[in-house]
Length: 256
Image (cartoon, rainbow, N blue to C red; front, side, top):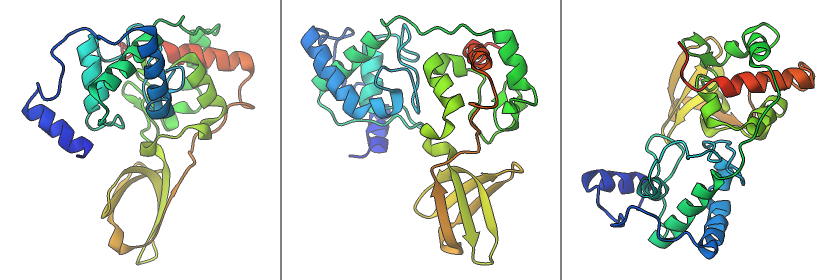
């Protein structure tokens, strides 16, 4: 059964395969240990081994970003989140509860901190040296080639943000990979891949134009594991990196 079908069935019958309890019954140390093993194998690739984010949301925050109850967290682990990279799973109910218990425990870890100055970081992000708004947006300003930063501080940890600034190619989400296509007429188009299915691909090029192309009209299609984002390892000092991280952490979607 595919994740999409699982989600559709759940929408048709909200009680499908859901437990009749509100609180997680599997929270003992042994269950947490098993939940950690399941999490490491199935979740850590997106959320990080310590839950500090990556492709997926930062889970090492109290409470986790989306679910407020144990049952809501069970539902997300079981059925995923539609139109995101969070998939459904066919794990046994007890295993779902064990993963959920371990995810809850991640929020009990002391939060990471940064010593930077958000005001100085804002100047760097918005200024020419950073050039961040050429590809990223904050509120209604900026570009669309990269992920929006408006609420990035609520989604990512200081450690993840620092790694992304220093090693941008280390973790690239599927929805922001570069792709190059060549049409049968010889036209070459390079841009960020927005969507792809067995029959078509959609790209946003560097002039912000969206191209939707059928694959049977292409002579070449290459999706690359690289990004247009530069490394700031030599562009900024260590102190300036701290400032930028501090500013990005302050962006939590509550801008005027």
